[in-house]
Image 1 (cartoon, rainbow, N blue to C red):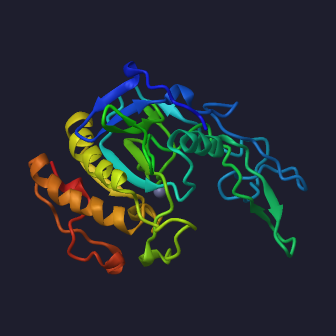
Image 2 (tube, rainbow, N blue to C red):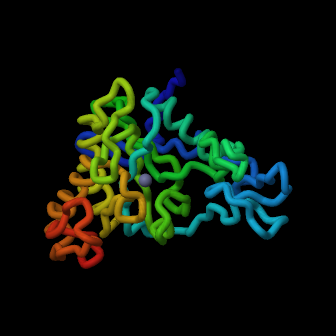
Length: 279
Ligand SMILES: [Zn+2]
């Protein structure tokens, strides 16, 4: 197990129940950083798209074409909640392992019929860690506070959400594999109940109310489910963040607007929606 020795100068925020601890310098980076991998289809020698596994028609370009970049004094207006949908290793071990997964070069294998390449899910070949923050399932406790990891500088535009959210958004990933029956995810990982921990629920609340809104000045709280990933971050955190929008209306001095969700997806018709309407 990796041991994290807390260096107090790396604590960037202290809230009621949690603190944010900067581990940006410890996170793995791809050797091509700020670019990612370049992978060739072993048969055609054409570049494979590291995300989709599709062979790109044009050759000679990086498979992961874009790069991570920094915007000086970037203003994070949007916070997006995610689940890792991954393992339950101890907090610091898992954040490092997740970081390795993102930067490890991807591999493909033939499908059974040998018609196409299938991504083996062993790595992404991305420039660095996807999310801005990482909330462990069993967080380290430092001076009575749950330790949330900050994994990218706030100025950095990394890849967590898509849908145009990354530019001025910060992604907070909750470690674990959480159920979302509305998206067909109904079987928990062995040995778990498929629900976030109590610590994570506390972090979900505090992060938005005590940090994102008053410190970052964020105005939009959303979940990956609203950006083409229905199972993320799972039912409990989805409902939690929708509830937080209600709580947060008065905080922002705004008015919660009714949301239009496609076809009443997730049974949320009439629920408060994205805070984009709030001033
Ligand atoms: Zn997600």
